[in-house]
Amino acid sequence: MLRQCPDLLAQNINHWLSRSEDTSLIRTLRGQMRAVLSNRYRIVDHHDILAMVVTELQEMGDGMTIASCQVTDARMYIKVVNTNIEDAISLNDPVQAGFILSNSEVGLGSISIEPFILRLACLNGLILKDRRQRKNHVGRVSENNDLYAIDTLQAIDDAFKLQLRDLVRNAISITTFREAVEDLQVAKTGIITGKPAKAVELTAKAIGLNQSESEFVLSHLLRSGDLSKFGMLNAVTRSAEDVESYDRATEIERLGSDVLYLPSTTWREVATAN
Image (cartoon, rainbow, N blue to C red; front, top):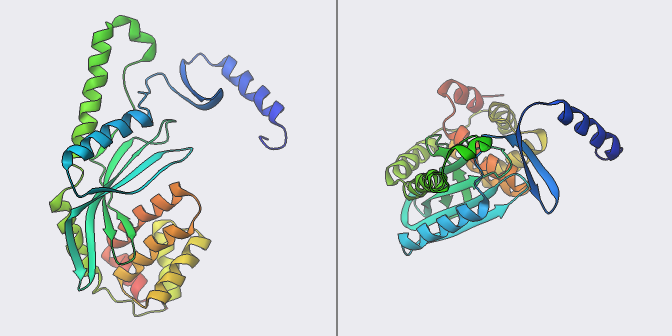
């Protein structure tokens, strides 16, 4: 409808919005509506997050580098690596610790900070899922702002920003990094004895890859020659470079964590598939 009959789409939307008694927050950019959100949605703009992160990284000192960053229609991403925290999966296969911070201005998820591991041999990124490092965009009801003094509202927002600052400071955990490295080392011992194509098919189904993405994974797995759980994981994260969407590429890097922590019964089925 948006492509073929935008006037009809606008008429429908305006009709149903006029019938709603809910109070909503409308986010716009350059005169265009970006999102219809709850009146409890806490506005945390990308530039506020970025200003805070840059300040914190400067205070953390040398070794903090931006591995990648992007702003999409859905989210802002900042991938940070601490070059001072390094280990190795095996000889000549070093990895470094980092984190990925993401934020959505249009209600597509909470502010999140997740551990990130960069493999230097190929620059593949692995995002470790950590739901503790999240902060929801949920705040005071906008229409009740007149109940509070301006300095009270400012204090509430300042406290929220301090919480985000603490999340950034705690984002790179040496303990989490070392535990993940140990898990990656163990993954090298999980050998695929069945057919690689079938193993990729089952892995794709288990973690949620589509057909074209699974084809990328199979290509990278065969090209690497590493028929192990570690090889499968790296084939998945390497395929992130093959998709056009930065949002989806980041999600695929996160799906690498799903491969690493597949249930043992599922991995046995993948490894022996024929």
